[in-house]
Image 1: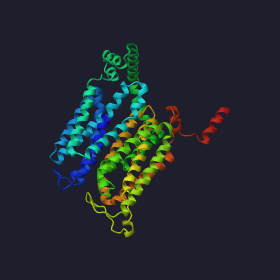
Image 2: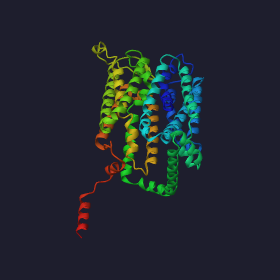
Image 3: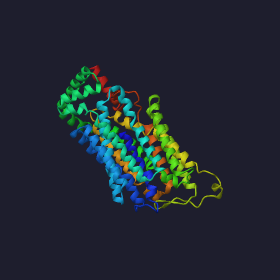
Image 4: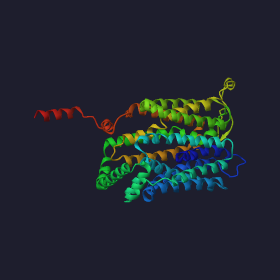
Length: 469
């Protein structure tokens, strides 16, 4: 439910921006204002991710989740009651910070209290729940005013609040704070087996003592390891994968879906087409969870990238060829140099078909695989810090792509923007083919061996000569 709430804030801009830009809008705003409204949550998420981790360590996982839920609800209330642009931006920033708190704390909390046999399932659900959250907001936005949507969205975090209120604090955090009796009590409640709880409590205490003993060594080792060429190579690989993930246009489509359909001569109805896109995203995510178990990661990324490149390239061509009138912010989507013969051809279904293909392709590969591929290729001794760097840059890429979308449309026109997305997806596909190794079903030692430099012929000769002596 926590990640469902994150999906709500991602999908909200798509259903609210068309109304806010209309002539009868209660709040005066232009396209530049709406680009800030759409993208500001990503800045809030970066802040929330950084502060949320510190808060979680300071006051505990449970209290941090409760605080995040209250922040979410307050943010949504501010949005629903806003009378000026500043209110909207404040509410979006607050919900973005709460989302960052959730993203850090909820997954850590689940990992620390869940049994090992269900951790894999719990780890694969976040993307699906985000997709479901986006879909529900799009469905609500098609039938009610955006203020009502905001009020409904404000209720979802309160379900999380009251549910978590009755859950125990993380035993791992309690042990780290020296509260062993309370940790044992919570473990007994979670496992319903006093003997197993006692063993787990002793194991956690041992791990705590070992971490303390190795802490100073680990810090020095991490700094040294970041100068290792194999680590630098993996960092660059992770940054590139996340760059493609965010600049292929997926979140721009999610944030501005209704507007894109509205100005693309919608085939059915702009809201219905947006809802259809949401259903496709959700079900494609479900399919991806099964495909990952049967297909290689590189194969899925390549198929995903080709589908994205083809669909956005075709959509760009549609925008170039199809004559229609309408302003997307300050930019006019029209091309008067279209042959009359093309006007007789009914191609209004092309945008919906292209975006469905794009969303399906993204969801089965680039939308989910980088999130576990990147941590998987990082060395264990620098994994936490390396992931902090790459995940932080991911949010920065997301902000940049969403914030600059309307500006890019103004400069390049719609066809140029979607051709750019097509080029990024094609670049990502080639990058995977040339540089990304297959790591499916490999353990940490086997992955580490892949990234180690191969011995040269001279090295073999030197070793042979030493052996001869």
